[in-house]
Structures are given as C-alpha cells and as structure tokens.
Length: 353
Image (cartoon, rainbow, N blue to C red; front, side):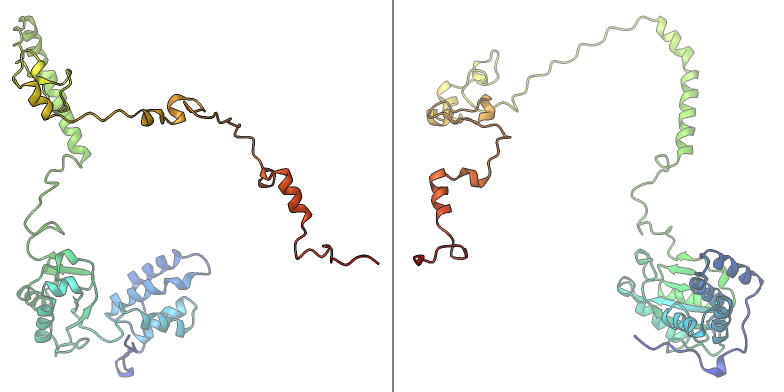
C-alpha cells in the first residue's frame, strides 16, 4: 500500500471554514451519534470539506478535529487512511475517476485511461495546464453491468466509449458539465439488458394502482352487460353438443399377460395378439419362496413373535438392566474373588506368623 501524505505546505491554504449550508449539515451529522461518540462523525465531515474545497486540506482536518474535540493525529489518521479523500489539489471543474477493475478492464477501461492521458495529463493526480481537470484510476465503482464507467464527483457515467468520454471531458473543461446527463451513455435505462427488456415489460403485475384501475373497469363493464344478459336469459338455451368419446388409455398399464391387463381379451380391442406372443413379451412374475414369505417384520403383522422357531419373550421398554446385572452370578462371584494387581489389600501369599 502506498504512503499517503498531505500536500506540500506551499499548496496548503491558511485556514478553513464551512459555509453556511455545510455548517448546518455538519451539525446534523454530529447529532446522529450518541453523546460521547461525536468523534465518529469525522468521516462525513471530511467528505463535506472535500465537496466544498475539492480536496482535503490540513486546515480542514485541524478545524474538524477541533469541532469534534479530538487530537489532530486522530484526524490525520482517518484522512490519510481512506483513499476517498483527495490530499492534493484536483481539477477545479472535474476530477475523473476511471474504474480499472476486471469487468471494466474487459470492456475497455484502458482506452478510457488513454483518453485521460491525452486530454488531461499523462500521470494521475496531476491537473491539466489550466488546473481545471485531473484524473485517477480507482477500484470498483459498483456498476459492473454497465462497464466501462467513470465517476465525476457524485455522478457516474456508464457504458462509455473513448469518443463519448472525450466529449464529456471537453464539456466539463468548458464549464458545461451540468448539461451532461449521468448514467448509461448508450441509451439504455439503468442496468436493463443492452438488447432491451425480456421480462417485466408490463407494470400490471407490480403496480397496485394499475390492478385497481383494471378491476374497476371490469366491474363497470359487468354492470353495463347486465341488461343484455337478462334479455339473453329469456331465450331458451340450445342443447349442448355431445362430447366426443375419448378412448381409454393403456399408457400406465403394466406389460403382462394377466387377464386384467391383457388387451387381447378386451372387447372391442384394437390389439389382437395371440396369448403365446403376449406371454413371450410379458414380464415374468417373481418365483414364490416360502422362506422369503415367512420373513416378515413385526410391524407388518403387529406381533412380537415369529411364525416359526422359539418364542422370544419381549420385555417392556422400561425394564432396563445395568451392564453389571447381565453377568451371571457364578462368574460375578469368581470375578469378585480374584483381586486385581493394583489392589493394595490383595493377599501377598505369605503365611501369617
């Protein structure tokens, strides 16, 4: 990260003061923070100073620090940390920020920078001969769909070509920057597709006022049609035409030779095949297995025993037994009689005297 320093002393003004409008705005910003946290307003106050002077001066930093009752070094830390603050004089009429992030670079931002080099200055942060214009390369400005783009003050100019940027620079240099309409410069609206809208072409589904207007129009049309409907009701209606018969579908029926699904056994039937041919094309039924038929889950027959074999006595779920209780008494007694090697009370094998 490059070191950001204040401008030379010869370029610094002697003092700074907010004008009446910005002074009122500064007070409103300070009121937004709780008592004891007013120093947090230094970021918006520095932006107000930059919008008023074009860049952030040392006198502005010190004046704002005095307003917020904070040391000068804290104000300098904020001003030199954020790249949104211009610490050197910029163009008096326009400071052009050219986005150089990947989407804009792929769409021709390098050509826009070449225009700035030829029309303003070869290097960034340098003004032109008259001191009216300057430029710099910045990171993403947030309109990637409309790449490439530049930002001048708070306005963004998108969908640019080198020729269109050259025209905009000339207008700002001539003091006619207010006549340039910000936004896309190729005629499209905001970020809609360049070929035109493909969805949401009508506002009927979005605006409630449009839907209410259509509802009122439909209600009025229904009321106007009531006399005609009453006159038509006196005329006996014509007999409805009989619907055309629909042939049954065999799409979901299995392909077997069963009587229920054999199309050759239906009368009348459009399919006439021999039973042998039907049976050859049918899916064979699974073989019967008595062993498999005897294997049924207890939930199926709602019983707790099998059909064959020994009966397993089911215990209630509450009959929990500890692991120690599952050991047979004889084995448990033998295990208890044999002391462990770590037991200090085990017999040593010596006979008592």
